[in-house]
Length: 403
Image 1: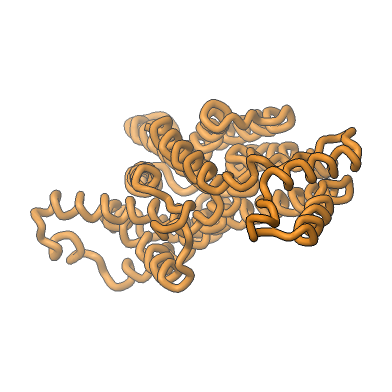
Image 2: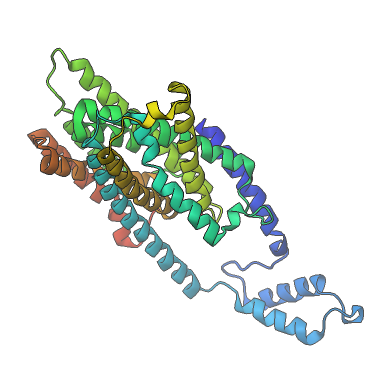
């Protein structure tokens, strides 16, 4: 399914690139070692081929010379290359900052959901928490009119890419979020957070490498190992083996599945945003897929009786879900922009900080004890995140293919 989604997006992107690149097929290219004289000669030759003769009444010699001078001025220099490198570094740091912000937001969402877990239908909760973001995206699309939603533009997202994003929303925000509700109820905030982060980390590394051709850097492998150790230590804080041991095991596995679902969403989102101007369309279609799929499921399950579906939700529970939806929207916006500027693996490593914040929130608001295993696991995760980002100190940010 993931391969199909990414293939649909890549086919759509290549079609958009072909539509926008006709003008540059005969453009002379500068390569290191090419002299300015040779380049000027190439410019004059290409201009003489592409520019109509004055006898045809289309162009004058003066206009040709202006075109030649402006083309030479666009030659890539070392200073321009350095500026592009600095800009890429700034964007990569912005991706890191947004990844950390999304971690804080997701930890807050998990804490809010933990306060009503077991009281609210998980499918109702999964749908309601997407409504604030969907409403904001609809307003943004109407006001900003993004080119990806304009059929007359080459950047139009197209039905195949839209279907891939819609299916991604079903997998990540319908199935994944509903499963997370059960995990939170069965094994608590800290353990379920560790489980889904493990699935997110491992799933993102494999998907990014296999499907997006973005092999993790050596230090990222080391950081992922440290994070995996921290997640294992955290999992040792699960309830002791006994009559309810199966609950702890199943709850942890459900949380891992949730993380894999989220990693699929991040990978497809990054693949979609390789075509510029698709932020609103990408996030909007993923969110729409989640809301529509959950609503249809609830209608079928409850016999098309909305009073059965929503009648048991209290005002307090609805307020908590909507507040979680607002914070979740900020998290989704942050992570969608983050995977545009940094690789899926990098962002997923930063999202491991959700566990640290989750343990702190669980201790502060739900009286969940911080055991030795939880503390040691948190330290390992922090170390892994830091190790994974050490390359940025040398000014060589890890970014994927040009977006």
